[in-house]
Length: 75
Length: 262
Image 1: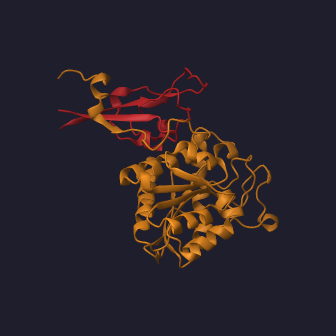
Image 2: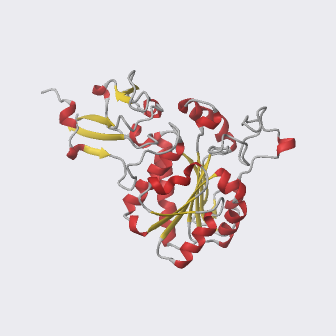
Image 3: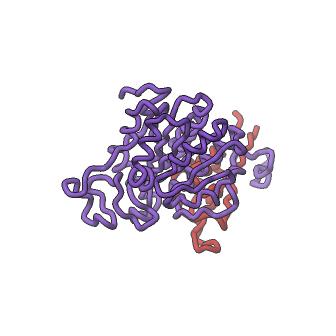
């Protein structure tokens, strides 16, 4: 069975750390970082990148559109 | 099998989702987790998918989304408080081949702009109205709005809305569905991925309907106002599901000019 691997890229400086994406992720990939960005928000990052399936859920609920999603099929 | 690294995945050819080109690079002025941002992304993606950026004219309201013209790379006219449907009427009548939409909050559409909204819907203007309902005046500091739920605390009703003194919450979307001028009336939300996908379908339909020239397409989006509700974003969404949705149930009210029986 083909496996799907995904990855997200968060625009760290534009992220406002609302954590809506963290809740929306079905495979618990995302979490808020302990560090803050230039505005003082704890930005979102891939805590568990192996689990990402590239489902876009985090990106479509992101109010600020800071998430870009990539997906690849692994044979 | 060789281990696949993030570098192998993050390549242009594997891209599946990115911010719409119609969104400008400006940082949205909304609070973290605000549904306005999600609604903007949906509208931008819909317009991009339809390829109608050049033919779309938006009307921005007064409220948190007053700066919409800064965030969407479209032709946008800012209207006086509540008068967006009237301005959109004029634009659409002068340029009937353009896609015209208004984007309004509940303080704009359901309070000061009630008359304009009802009359534009009753005349059956061929426009799309996107209505963001968070049950509060968000921009000015969380005052009670006509859509505020019974018992809901706000800065001007700190002990909760007392309906015997302050009146009942207004279900304006149900009211508009009764008017013969509306062609498509629906209520959606943007708090979960599923809700966002459904809202996107609804907004797409609302824009497509303008090609038919049958009347107003009205999309209400029940949204959060975490600053006004004094809750963190995720908690605000949970509060919305528990309290807003029983009073403002999601779903289509009128499709293709026919009321949906529930």
